[in-house]
Image 1 (cartoon, rainbow, N blue to C red):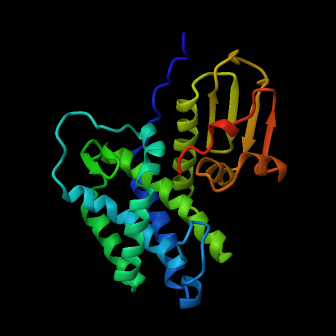
Image 2 (cartoon, rainbow, N blue to C red; image 1 turned 90 degrees about the vertical axis):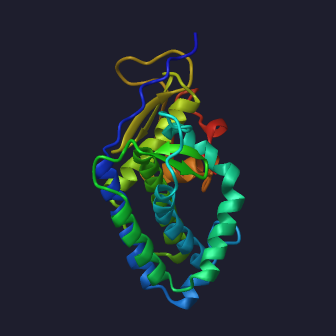
Length: 267
């Protein structure tokens, strides 16, 4: 019998909305201070410059307003659950890249662009009572509350991309980082259900995964532990499992504690 799937984690709509706005504000303030030379720097995201990456961050927030402006999709249930979102994104990577490049060219005033999408989000996304509203998104219909959780992933991941490209220390909102880490950890547990390996990303997430003998008490025989940013980089393909182990950014004990074949979780 295959391992039973666990009940999905619940996220508070208001807290997620607040976290999205807080993380966007951190990026907004950093982007506003960038020089033309910094905006022209390369990033680890293929051919994207910092300017194109910054434009994409505006798309991340603006996408919520764009989705809310469309008619609500039919049916009482979303076509895509929260845990189905991470692997679904890779199929749209090329289109997303094109849109970001077009936006970076068409809207060179990033400060004005950021102000516009932030004002739109504040006007369009209520603080309560709308989490169940269905949205038509690029990857399929989703609940608004779930789509906002995906925004924490996008914002946290791309904050790290900006920091890497520029040598900055743009801060992370704790709630946004927590939601990002938890969604990616739960995605791993959903991809490889089981209880033989415990994955710890303190202080935000602990999940069990991979079929085999289930651990119930005491010290688990197979444990993976890493920090939040390393976990995000592993889950999104920004670093490789072997490299993280070699650099002592991940500790893995036990014969089953090898996640190489399961990563990345999204591209």
